[in-house]
Length: 208
Image (cartoon, rainbow, N blue to C red; front, side):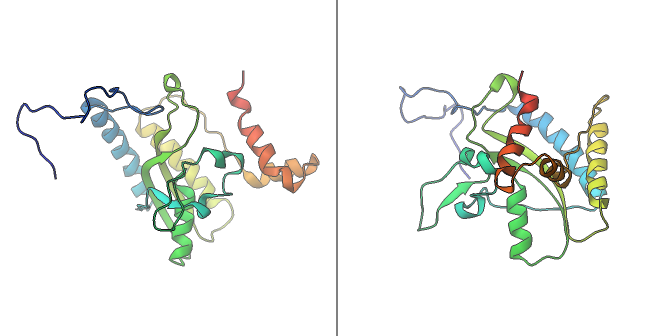
């Protein structure tokens, strides 16, 4: 806990330093934080109604865990300076840390939610809300279930969250990896090129 005398301004340590946030980041004042917290509370309420429990994972993971999990996107991972002989990197999303948690604790099933910041060394576009540090709200179901039941529940959760946030008109698009894989196989795409082609398809809706 830190404190300052009343009316004493915070010190930067150097009056000549440029007073701006790092590229691809921004500050959030009290008003924005109050709005964010209200929205996140509504999202958590829906997650809990579906029986999900909260989970928190480290903001950084072992670099070897993250490497090779994201295809071409791996170049966007923030690597940290090696400390104590253990190469580390900031988490790119919340899914890989969750998979690591399930495997580490040898869990047969788990339904969890996590609302936390993730970091991507991307080309930021602040005007479009694309930053290098942002929140992800994850709802995941791990374990063996009847086919498509967890998938259907996840779609239902998305719809309930959007209704809870009073989003009146929306479209939910479903990306099914197995269906996509079958389509690419029929088109003659080799297994070695699967990740690259998927990455290209993912970028189609971002192109003019």
